[in-house]
Length: 116
Image 1 (tube, one colour):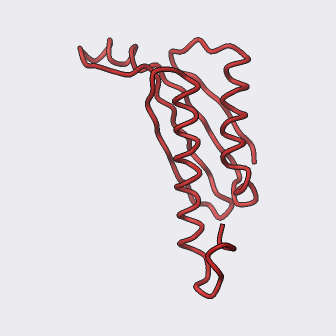
Image 2 (cartoon, one colour):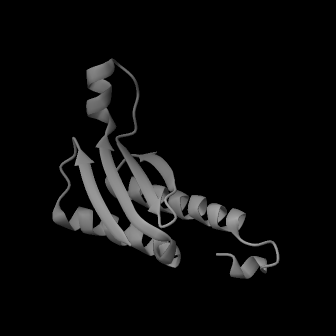
């Protein structure tokens, strides 16, 4: 499973990006044989809001896009006040989305515990 990180309008240091990657890897490791690539994009919503007019925003959006080995693609998005919190919520959502997709595609004869 390859993880790529990108930022848009955010100044995130090396330690912050390492923490985001570690959190995403931890959440998705269980499903790594099914994943080809994971792309994480961190976006500063305050800059987006400033360019599109006055609206309230929390600060950071984290988008996780998972490319599956079978060619499919799944996404999870979270918005929070800071980078680490947005990444943690998005990583947890990504794991749930992927878990549901795996369970949906598992054979019906397979026990529920073995589907993940």
